[in-house]
Length: 472
Image (cartoon, rainbow, N blue to C red; front, top):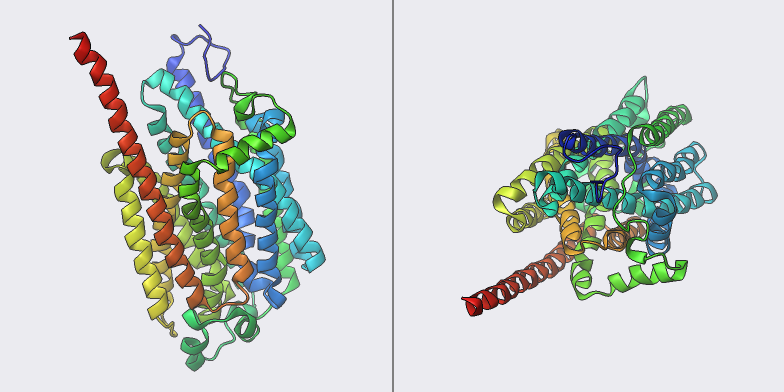
């Protein structure tokens, strides 16, 4: 009997344990490849508001990345995955990120913006393929273990994001070691000790304070960083090509689009975006992108680079990445024990507390440890938002994963665009107010969906009981 949703050249019964091992092996290697690839991209992206601060070039290039990602998520994922399959979509889309890293060697608007747009075009199919691959893997393993696919999906997502989020450790370790090596005075802040509480933190305004606070980095340092990051990206693409097996599900090649034309495939994604359930989750999706972009661009510039120096950005982001990775591992198992809703409530309270702290606290010399605490808490919150909401998409929209994950990344990208577009022009305190408002509205939408699903489950349970009572 051939496998229904995962094809290897073996029989089901004699090699059941081998097949489940292969599925897990694929998830691990996929996670390792994403970790290696985003070691490079995240490391470079986290520095943009500090190393390319003049005229807002760094944040403008990141806005271009996510503008390309919005276009990509609307037009490309279903068609590209239908054409290449999930494995080769991941392997080949990694290459679209490389010009952006190369552009760091000559950062100008006419090099960084096109490279950012090109990166965004590859990002849509890449992340949609990742989500679809894991959903298919969970579906396949459920056939062997009799564990519900939605439970396995949350575990796979937890494992994936645990490995993936360590990119923040390695990418930032590379940048911090390179920038801090030798006699690099540009690694420290330019701000006088007495002015740090006044210029930095919630009062920071990039357009007026950045040039005073953040010195430019030597060219040879950036060349070394770019070379290391490009090598990481090439290695990630090769790893997927060699170590990850292709996934196949019944009718997968038709996907959500059913073998239709490009415009018909686009219509599938757009119809999904218009579903009431998706609309209720829209603000929370945007918030996830908004808070991630704020932390990597605004927090690092207004608190870390301004008060301590650019050389410390990587070390603070390493704490964020470590905390995020551990949280991603734990949240998958905690969800099984306590459910998704308590975890979302925990993230809501914890993130709200961090926002209040950002508004009330003024950094001083010697307060470095506070930034590491904030990074740790932020990473834990992000792990809950990312794993639980992504996993929720896999269960809410089962059988429509391509369109669902495309929509998820679309709205997340909108959050990034908003954050990077306003970054050079608003004080940090106003951005924190925006984050609080988006989080509260987004969570209200999420609670509404949870309530609707709860009511739907009760109605279906009653319908099942009525025929049984009649038959009795």
